[in-house]
Amino acid sequence: MIPSIQRFARRVFGAAVAGLCLAVASGAVAQPFPSKAVTIVVPYQAGGSLDAIARAIANQLSKTWGQPVVVENRPGANGMIATQSVIKAPADGHTILYHITGIIQNPLLYKSVSYDPLVDVAPVIQIGGQAMGLAVPGKSPIASLDQLVQDGRAKGTKGHTYGSVGVGHTGHIWSELLVSEKKIQATHVAYKGTPALVIDLVSDRIDWAFLSSAEAVVRASDNSVKILAVTGAERVRQMPTVPTMRELGYPGFEMVGWHGLFVPAPTPKAVVSKIETDVRAALAAPELQKVLETQVIQGTGLGAEAFGKLMRDDQARWAALIKRFNIQAE
Image 1 (spheres, rainbow, N blue to C red):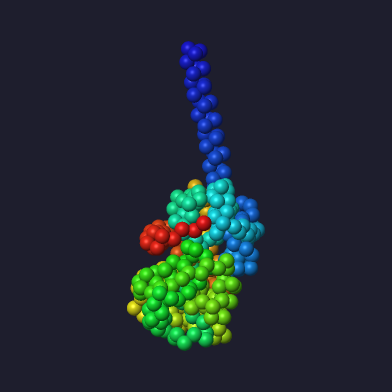
Image 2 (image 1 turned 45 degrees about the horizontal axis):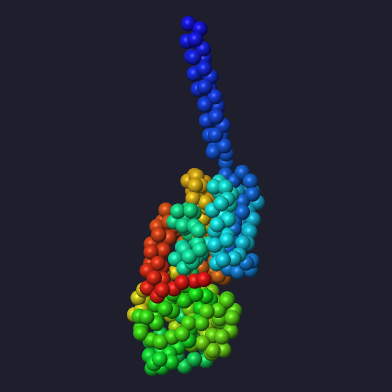
C-alpha cells in the first residue's frame, strides 16, 4: 500500500510542477507587447530617406505604445550587417528591421550572404513603394524614351554611357533590361552614391540614368534633368505628366522598390500582428503622410501575409533578371 501511495504522490507532485511551469511560461507569453524599449534598425546612415521615415514611425509608435522607440543606424555591406544583427536578436518584437528591396536582392547578387530573406525574417508590413525615373541631362536634345533608343542605335558600337549607384542596384538592372530589349550599345558606369551619379548626369558626362523618384522630382523641378518615363504600374503622383515605361510601349518595368518592416522569423504571430496594426495606424498620421510625400513614397500598408507573397514573387522576378544579365556584385 505504501509504495502505491508514494507513486501516486509523485505523479500528483509532477503534474503540479508541470502545471506551474506552464502557467509561468504562459504568463511570459501573455505579457503585453511592448514591455520595454523597441529598436528599429535602419541599414543605412542617418539623414537618408529610410532614416527619416523610420524616425517618423518611431515617434508615432512611442506615443501609441507608451514605450521608447529608438532608431539605430547600422550601415554596411549594402544592408546585410543590419539584417544579420536583427536575425540574431531575441524574437520578441522588440527589435525591428526597416529595409528596402535590397533585402531580397542581396542573396541573388552576393556569394557571401548568410541569410535567406524568405526564411530568416518575417515580413510585418510594407510601408510603401518607390518608382524610378529614367533621366537624361537637362541640356540633352533627347526629349522622349523613343528618341533615347533611336539615338543609342544611331551611335552603333560607340553607344551610350549610363550610370547607376552600383553593380546590382535596381537602376543598373533596369538599364540592362532597356539595353537588352531595345538592342542598343551602352556602357555602365557604377558610382559610389547618388550625389556623384547626379553630378555627372547633370554635367552631361553620362547619357542617362534611372534615379529614385524622390531624386527625379527634385532634379526635374530645376530642369537640371529631364525625366522621360517612370517605372511601376502607375504614374508618380508628384510627376503626373511623366508616363510609365509600360504606357510608352516598354513592358517589364512594373516592379518598384519598396520599404518594409521585418522581425526575426520565430517572432510570435500575435506580436507581428500588433506591430502591423499599430504601424498601419501610424501611417495614417498627418506627420507621417508628410514625410512619405517628401520622400515620394506611395504608402501601401500591405499586411504581413500579402507582403510576404510580394517578397516571394519579386525575388523570383529579380532572380530571373539578374541571371539573365549575369550580374554579380563583389
